[in-house]
Length: 324
Image (cartoon, rainbow, N blue to C red; front, side, top):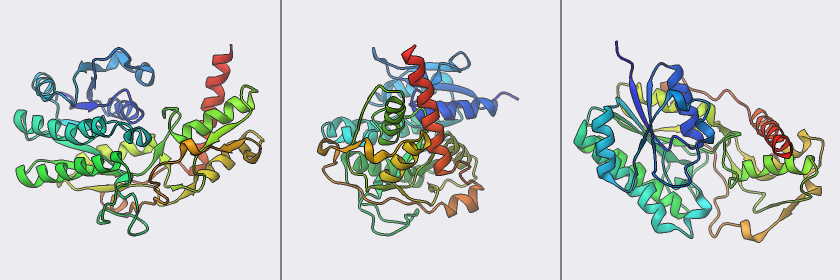
């Protein structure tokens, strides 16, 4: 029997790299879509690059998406590509809408045209809940996004539902709460903290500048969350799922744990900087993953403290290598 084929958009990102590893272990042929640009970074997938088929395409160009689907005939499509940094979405709202909202429509429509039997996963986000109207947030919680990114993700989410209901397609959205790892970009606060801790511990920096320390998030490990994406596409009926730990922690707690892991007190090094405050803050996100637990049999394996420790250890190693 021929192996299953999966197309991953955004394969060079954090989630794309973990999902590619996961699917390869399951025996899939993995096709990864990358934008044709001068700055594509293959760092996160270099250890598996020889096992992947990388193709050039862009969520801004539906013709390229149709071409990829026709040529490679995937059984499953995982749309992880987006302008995914919330802070960037204020100065670049139109670009964020083009990729994170309309990009989903282009890809869904390409699937509909080429083969509506392809199973489709859309990376929805807890940022869609924004100014939360209930705690914890579940699949039925109304959305109230607080950033152009969150607004774009709401569009992407509902257009995925719309194609499911309009065309009978197997389209699913995973509403993932914050999921981190050593592969997170340095612009994200968790990685900024773990990397900053490593640099301070090794004597390269004396302070770490951050924004709102009281913002609370439901943080899990990205490596655990990609399994949930796959499980969603193995279900007979397509549905949407919240993927979360069900715990909430503040940025301050993250700092406290990260610094204490290397024997330091965060209060001696963290400086509040107004430049890192959001125009409209999301204060509290905490997900209710009970539907995923009951229907998918999924639950997170990595605790909050294990995640922080893993990230600090990885950054200590990275910074030491860079110092050589």
